[in-house]
Amino acid sequence: MLYFSKLKIFFIILFSLILILIASSNLIKLDNNFLNKKINLGLDLQGGSYLLLEIDNNPLIDQKLQNFSIQLRNYYKEKNIKIKNLKINDQKIFFTISDMDKEKFITDFTNEESDINPYYPRFKSHQFDLKDENDFIILNFSKQGLIELKTSSQDQALEIVRRRVDEVGTNEPNILKRGNDRILVELPGLDDPMRIKSLLGKTANLSFRFVSLSDTGTFGSEKLKFEDTEEEAIVSKRIIMSGDNLLDAQPRMDSQTNETVVTFTLDRVGAKRFGKATATGIGRQLAIVLDGKIISAPVIRDTIASGSGQISGGFTFQSATDLALLLRSGALPAPLNIIEERTVGPDLGQDSIDAGKIALLIGFALVVLFIFFKYKVFGLITNIALIINLFLLIGVLTLFEATLTLPGIAGIILTVGMAVDANVLIFERIKEELKNEKNNLIAFDSGYTKSKTAILDANITTLLAALILFFMGSGPIKGFSITLGVGIFTTLFSVYFIARLLTVLYVSKNKNKHGIL
Image 1 (spheres, rainbow, N blue to C red):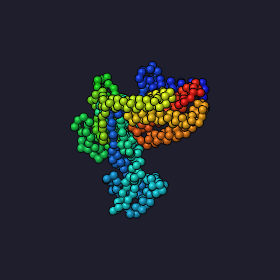
Image 2: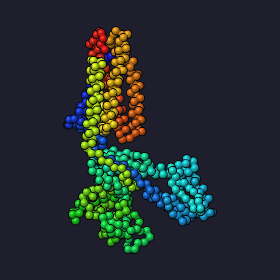
Image 3: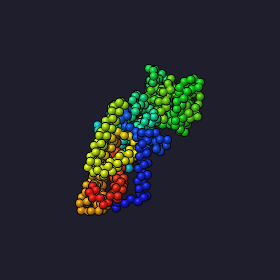
Image 4: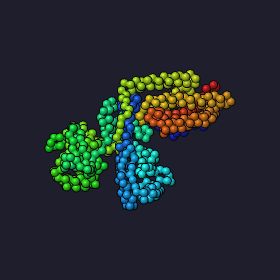
C-alpha cells in the first residue's frame, strides 16, 4: 500500500542524513572520528608506484631438497638401509642402494603409511616422485609437491611483503597474488619507489656464525664478502642462531661511540644459544650474515646472556632503520625479482579524475533533463531521489574508507543509469494501470507492486554478476564490482523508500487529479 508510518519516515530520513553527512566529509573536515572519513583514491587517480614481483623458488627448492636428503639418509639409516653416493643436481636427488635393499626401500617409500612420503599411492598427493634409472634412485618434487611448495612460499612472501610495506607507512597499499609465483604491489601516492624496491629486493635471511680460525678454509666453512667492501672472511656454515629467533630490532644511537647501531632482542631459545656461543667463543669473531654477505664481525669480549645485543656496521640512521625493519618483518622464503615497474604521476591521475567528473556530470545532466521532460513532477521526484542515491553510495564507500579507481567511477555512472531504469519501469507500469483505474492511489500502488518483480530480477542478476567479478577478478575489476554492488542496494533504497515516499506525498494531495502522469 502507498502508506508510510511516521516511524518508517523517521528512519528513512535519519538513515539518509547520516550517510549524506558521512559523504560530505570528503569535501569538508568534521571534528568527529566516526564522521571524519574519506574515500581513498586508487593508483590510477592519485598516482603512485606499481610493482610486479616474481618469486624465485629455485633456491627454496634446492634448500628443501637438501633438507630432505638429510632426513632421507637418517630415516633409512634407522631401517638399516644404506644410502650411498647421494648428490643433488638439476633439482633432483640422486643416490644408490644395494640391490638387496632396493626393493625394500621402494616398497617403504611408496607405502601410504610411510612417514617419509605420506599418502603416496592412494591420493596421488605425494610430495616426491621416484624413478629407478641406471642403478640410481632419483627423487624429485611431484607436480602436487611443487604446487604446495609454491603456494606456501607465495602466502609467506605475501605476508612479509605486507609487513615491510606497512612499516614504511605508505597509504592504502594494494598487495595481491598473481598466479602462484607473483605478487602485485600498488602504492598510491608514492612517486619514488627506490626505498620500497630496496626493501622488497632483500630476502633478509639473517644468521650468526663464527669466523673460521683457519685462513685457508676447511670442510664445513665458506668464504663470504663483507657487504660494503671487497674484503672477505671464512665463516663456519654452522648457524648459531637465525633471524627466526629475533623478537624485535630497533635503530639506536650508541652513546659511547656516537655510532648508529641496530639493537635486537632474542626469544628464549635464541637467548640460550647466543649466551652459550658467546661464553665458549670469547676472543673469536662472530659474523653477522645477511643474505650471504657479512654486515658485521665483532670480536666477542664477554658472555652475552641477557638475550639482547647490537649490530654495528657504519650505518646511517636510514640504513639502520631499514635493516631493523627487515629483521622485524622476517626473512622471505625465496628471493623476489621485480619483473614489471610503473610509476603513475599525479598529473595523469588528476586528468583521470577530471575526465571521470566530466563524464559523470554529462551523463547525469542528460539523464536528469530526459527524466524531467518525460515525467514532469515525477521526473523531478526521480531526480531528487537520484541525487540522494549518489550521496548514499558515496557515504557507504566513505564509511568503509574504500579505495576509488577509474573502474569504480564507471560503476557509479552505471548506478545512475540503473536507478533511472527502475523508476522508468515503475512509471510506465503506472501509466498502464491508470488506463483501467480511475483511483490514482490504487493505480500508483499497483504500479509499484506489479513492477517490483522485474526490478528485483534485473538488480539481483546484476548483483550476482558484481559478486562474481569481486571474487574472480582483482584490482580494478574489484573496484568496479564494489561500487556496482553497493550502488544496487542504494538504488533499491532510493527507489522504494525515498522516491516512493515523495510520490506518496504528492499523489495523496492530488488523488482525484485527472492525467496525473
